[in-house]
Image 1 (cartoon, helix red, strand yellow):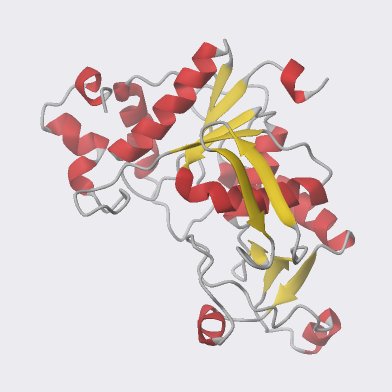
Image 2: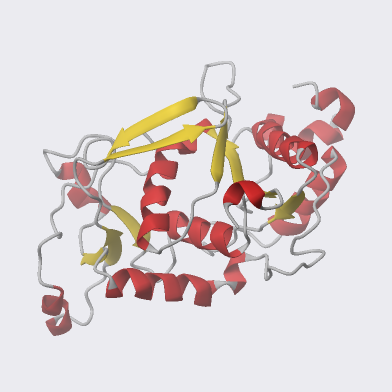
Length: 281
């Protein structure tokens, strides 16, 4: 069965690192509307993999705020489903298995470079997204066996991108997208030195395992989609369709972030706003 023949499955994938804001709600609402239009299933996945950033108290608040706003999902951490668990913190074995596949197939290598090392590299331009500077390839050709003599060395596992290859996909909102590996983005982290799976790997593994047919998310993740397509290919998986939403900006033209407490769903609710008025966006 190909992707077009599958029943539609979309997802909401918030992380409990702060209060959800109106920008999240707008993107999530598009995801829900697309699932409804396709008579599909909507999945809620709690992306709590990074224990250094999330706070437990944000999880029930997140679910409460989503319910208040009018979201209805058919599978999730609060209601279960056939593709659970729906908390990323309970899915580590899935990520570890994927990393082992990448290692066996030669797609990843250990990297001892710190963020400062990469920033200081003269040939490291910005990647144009939250990943930071493009990795200059310092550890690409090092012999991994040298780490055996330094057991205390901390390292990330990086994915080796095919330099010069154009990664293209048709976005459901923005149309044809093209990014050049090694130019628009470089080798990226899939497993962090503190033994935490990185976003790119966890997202791909979960979307594939949960049979997601379309990923709806913000336009700031267009470049991440190019990276993730490479991961799908390396793992022998079929990518879903993608639909990226325009970002909601503040009065200074910057995208909304969880630091914008005044526009958090919880604050708006406490001020007496109604879901119906907020859904006019």
